[in-house]
Image (cartoon, rainbow, N blue to C red; front, side):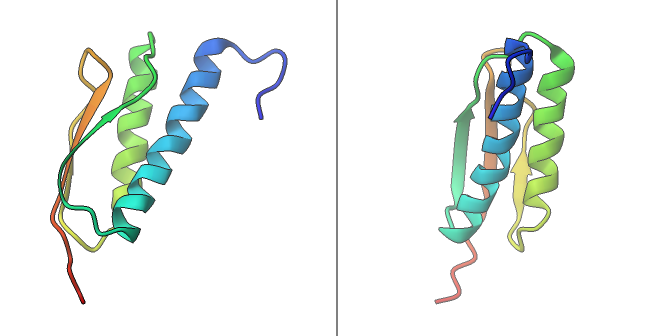
Length: 88
């Protein structure tokens, strides 16, 4: 998955980016609504935190529900709000 020469920060970024995509997907598939708090792996580079935020915003665009995404806090937490679709 990660090469020998990959820095730790790059590896963490890759894992967090993939997690953001998967989290958005699971929220849609399971129709999870409410306030969701995601605890990403801590990153030191602020530009990487911004990349995670942008990736999550892009991933939730596919959702037909109303989804709000906040930037990562100093603790590495992201708050997501999502309204359930409920088409049963």
